[in-house]
Image 1 (tube, rainbow, N blue to C red):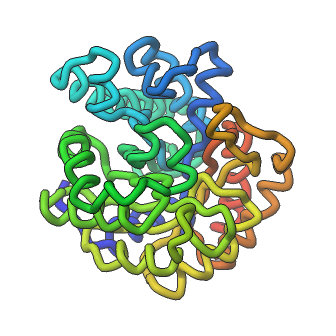
Image 2: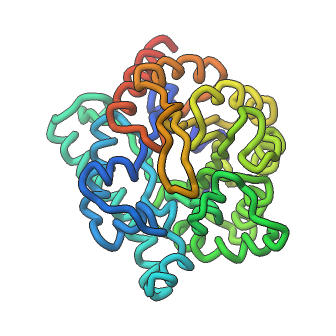
Amino acid sequence: MGLKSGSTFLGDFLRQCGGYAVIDGGLATELQRHGADLNDPLWSAKCLVSSPHLIRRVHLDYLEAGANIIISSSYQATLQGFEAKGISREEGEALLKRSVEIACEARNIYNDRASKGSWDDFDDGTGLKRNPVLVAASVGSYGAYLADGSEYSGIYGDAITVKTLKDFHRRRVQVLANSGADLIAFETTPNKIEAQAYAELLEEEAVSIPAWFSFSSKDGTNVASGDSIAECASIVDSCKQVVGIGINCTSPRYIQGLIQSIRKVTSKPILVYPNSGETYDGEKKEWVASRGVAEEDFVSYVDKWCEAGASLVGGCCRTTPNTVRAISKVLSLRSHRV
């Protein structure tokens, strides 16, 4: 597709969805629920090699729950990470493309079922009823590749520069930009330097599909590294390929204030897909449940997030198709009030 301006691409899609769009939920949690073993530096990307059918099944679960945007399983899929597991560069690039193909296959299955009258969420004017769906190709941070929890701190050390990060991400971004995805999702961006690297890559490579950026925060004011969320959002707002800016992998209680900070520096659509509220222990590689937010409490935030300026809402780690189903109901009610 040709690259539309930020206001046109997501604006048109949001209108098609009724004013608000639903992003999917946690992938790893659901893969584990279906029996996948993710105790591996590749994390959910391991399933691209071992059990792609489970990834397709989880995508489909989210579509059936009302998701309008499904995110590929490439978050932890880096060419460098694959090579460390003995997977060649060529095979690694094929796996990156496969992550998007699997999501597209799930969308095709969903649309095929919808055309047979299995569900009636959205009337596209042809008599067929379905949710409009985009496939986003996920790009995780350099810290996610390290698999040492630094994606949650954003502290990479002085040796890591914008150039280092561009060199690290360049080929993966090139492959995913030509994979058939509708957009690229730069997720859980933990610091300003990586946001700058992504933005420069999009322009240097003349990436022809749009992108969104989502940052993570531990305090409701700054991104994970301590850089200002407003400053990070400003950097990516100036990039013409960027069609949306927001927050993911962050506690629900911080989201409203972060939306307000982002709203001050951009007019582009704002997206939020927080965690369940639990916190991740990078050393133990496990989630600490003490701060978890009950599903009904998570969903009770959604109206506040939309009132603050969000128009795309979903879930990240530890959220489920049930979470997304509940979000979809809230957004559907809001759409009818618009």
